[in-house]
Image (tube, rainbow, N blue to C red; front, side, top):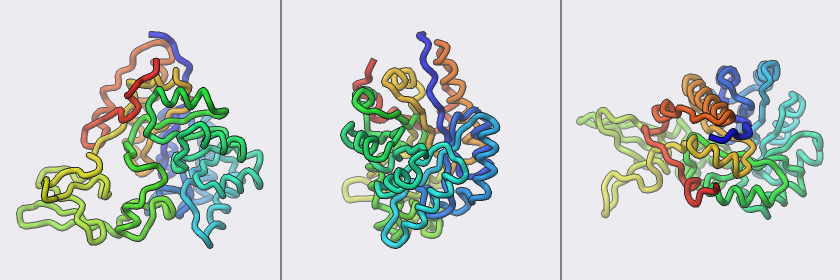
Length: 334
């Protein structure tokens, strides 16, 4: 097998402990967010205070790993100061890059902190060379995180037409909704994934058992699943729910619980020009982070020296024990 250039491994961290775990497991870079609505994983018990991030940046830098600030939700009128403060704090703490989704925040970073490295979040939904080049030319974006809707062939064509680095998701949530455009949870709970950073907040989730020990999952007033005795409860989101209709009973109307796993396509992604490989899952446990990051570290290092890695252990970590290569597999570029 041909030796390949080694890409950057970018890993999630929802807590300081998870960040240390990711770094120790071999992450080249770790992305995380401040507590509050400025990042797209605004869950109770997750994210960093300024003091926690100060110590975490120090820990990572001492081990030659980078830390990226995800400030990737969309501010609404009257709240932009929260996002600006997060940017200012990230710059003050010496984070290696700021990941932005909102065009106004991109302008703020470029104007107020022109020396700060800027990445374009997948939440921005930029998938065409024209859109990406606009951000590069106007705001000095150095890297774009591509939506999970492109084939490897399309990624190659994008790479050849833009003047910045590409980061692509390789493991975790398949992301079947249009990136940065999901309104399902907002419709049901009044809390927005894209503007508040919260998808299916725990305060709106209820589980109702029946006399046969089945468990109905409700998000707000809507029943989104019914789990029989012995089944594992899925993540309580509308898009992963099962529904009864006049046509079919108890079926996944939007998306089955299934994980993206592009380990087998890593050589193709690298050849297509992908600079950084991204693992999804800031809400995941430290055990999950350790296993996934170490497995991808081994896979990347093996491909880099022309060897075929053992990727079997990643199957056990996929959602529902199922994996997919999604749209990436189609028309694979060689």
